[in-house]
Amino acid sequence: MTDADTPKSADFGEDIPVDLGPRPGRPDRRGLRRWVPVVAVAVVVVVVGIIMWRELGDATLVFREVDEAVERREEMGEDRLRMIGSPVSGSVQEVSLPDGRPAVAFSVVFDGVVADVVHTGAVSDQFQPEVPVVIDGSWVQSRAYARTADDGWYFASDRMLVKHDNDYRVDNQDRIDDAERGGRYE
Image (cartoon, rainbow, N blue to C red; front, side, top):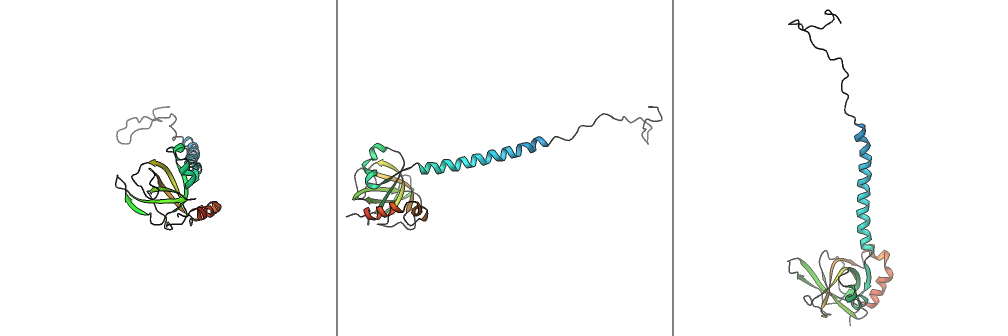
C-alpha cells in the first residue's frame, strides 16, 4: 500500500488506521434454541409426575366401612384411610378446634357400629343425616369430640364425598347400596 492509498482524515490530513482483520460474529443462538425443547420436556415430565403422585396417593387409601374401620383402628394407627357410613340424626354440630379452625363434629354408622368424626374442610352441600358419606382421614385417640360413639376415639377427616357426588357414584355404586342398607342407627 502506498501513501496515496492510505486514507487521510479530511480535516487534518492524518492517517486513519484501518482494521482489516475478521470481525467477531454474532453470538451463536443455535445453542440456546437447542435447550428450549429440552427444558419444555423436563417441565412437562415434572408436572405429569406431580399429578400422578397426587392421584396415586388417593388411590392407595384403604377403604373401610365404619364397622371394619372401628374394628381395625388400633392396628392402622395414624395411617390415612377412606371410610363410608351414614351420619347419625341429631349428631351433627359445628365446633371450633383448639387452633380456632371451624369443623363439623358428627357420628357415622354402618351395620350398627358407630364412630365419631371431626371434619375440617369443605362440607358437601348434600351432607345430611342418614345419607351415606365417604370421608378421608385418620384415627385420633381422644374424647375431645365425643358424640354418639363416645369410645375414646374420633376420626379426623379432611375430605368428604356424599353419595350424590357423581364422581364417587360412577365408581362405587355397590358400596353406596351397601351403605344405604347398613347405615341405619337404631
